Image 1: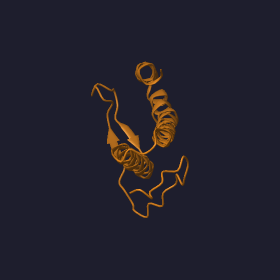
Image 2: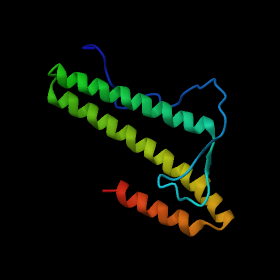
Image 3: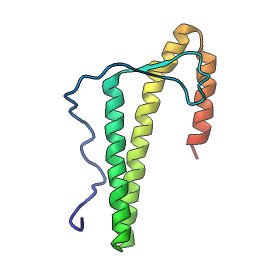
Length: 125
């Protein structure tokens, strides 16, 4: 692992090569007025990004265990924070383009906006 590097930026696109079914899920509280439907390929891209971040975090843990220089560890932590921010932005964008627009068509826009505001209150510093 000593030679392993964790670039600040890298290839963010994934070639899936696999066909997935449409996924349905509800908001975390289970009280959403409608199921959320997302493109399975989009969901898989997000899962792939999160898996990559998970591996990066394990790499940082190894760096700490190996007593690697603190500045090197901090740079890698910054890379993970950036990657998480990009995933959050993708999720927010998809929520706005898919879920909010669907709720508007179905007449549930007020509920969706309130749920989004509550999530943003917890998400943003």
